[in-house]
Image (cartoon, rainbow, N blue to C red; front, side, top):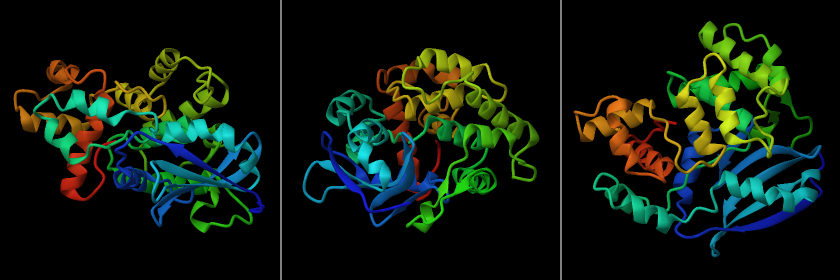
Length: 304
């Protein structure tokens, strides 16, 4: 890959923007070999319209914007890349409007006060995110990251002459993942079957996950119809890939525990629903604040 071409985008946001916590979220879930967070920036190899390159995103030292630097042939598509990068880093959010609603709740008010610029980090690829969500079912964030790294080595593709060793792999394509040998990968057989069944559904077009024209309601139904994919996975993907600000992964263990700790009478999502509905239309941001509270306290990524 030739690094001779470089394009730079300045992508504005509405302040405040909590860049350190955004990077922390990505860092805890970065796919080994594909994504890296280092020197205050997010980095990964990308492909766009058949052209390869490396994307780096960092906070501008003075302006209210993120700086996206694209190296390689993909740099010629810089203007087209502005939209997916902005979505990935939640640059269109209005934190004051969101915080103004959530801060009316006594549970969330101190969390909003502690992290007023918290965003919902997105994803470069909806396919990658669903793979991670399936792998992450009933295991820790750290364990899921380890298994994802194994998937990349088994079914992904190493990029020859890539200038950055920590992002020198392509994430597996749906077709490659569907046919890969995943024996002893570290997941139960049923979860492997669910993962490869999903990958095949994307590969054959049954689930047009990363097509911009795809209707999210249709995608929700299509995902839920697949074995091994439940409401938690769909809501998590809706939060991060489809930018549904009101998505709520009700069966997330950390969210359930956070709510029950505040009101022991509310143990299960069915009991918690009335309480969480009060956070509409910003429940995805409420989820981020609750996850962030646990991460701040424990110093390790929990939830999501």
